[in-house]
Length: 298
Image 1 (tube, one colour):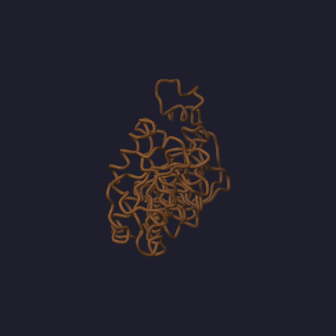
Image 2 (cartoon, one colour; image 1 turned 90 degrees about the horizontal axis):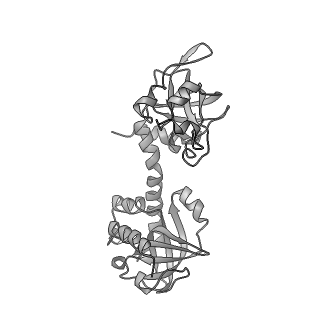
Image 3 (cartoon, helix red, strand yellow; image 1 turned 60 degrees about the horizontal axis):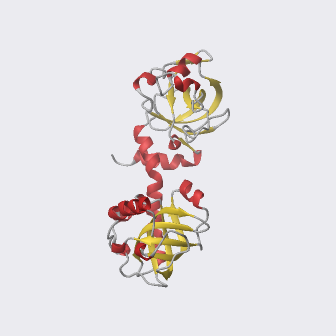
């Protein structure tokens, strides 16, 4: 049987995902909630009920071996798992969603990873697909795309300024300013291996995207240059980087925000911002999508 800690995790997930409706009868919002609440979602064919290809499962966990046909999910999470298509996963299924599952039928699995060995074990809510799985796969992909857009939409909603531009200079932040951005105010952080090593990128603004005016000529973006795990996900900038920035002055605490004041670049006053969330820096190919979101009725 699975270790107690894993059972607690599994139980929590099962409570959240219990007894979903027939997938072909789910509303788009119902489907999205299940996709959004899972690490990844896949359509697979059940090959062996009451069997497992990883350790730690027994019959009380309702395991089954499932051949993966197609996968949808967060790309960062899927990178860690590798290419799952055609692989055989062990799935511990919530008993309330086990009704109707049998060998050689297709089902959709709303899954969270649990065990990593030569093979992978997951916990999931399973729903049989009684009709065309190709038709359902299209709806599933749409829900996964909607999930992928959540961070972008959230950051757009919090952004003070959205621009396209190019980095024309990167420079170290003055020591007094960097000290004020310590995040931990007892003094030790300055000497910590986890210190952010703040820098400043000057961006020449090409277009203001959120509204036509006023469009600044330049903006300053304060960013942590370290790749330490504490700050690694935050975007890092180099000269000639170009793209779309979602800029903020609300990502730091009150004391730290005092650093985000007018700065000087080649005789110009330049307002400084942060772009600390991974979604705050987008490839230029996302411009059309961002403009579409801006035009959506509020």
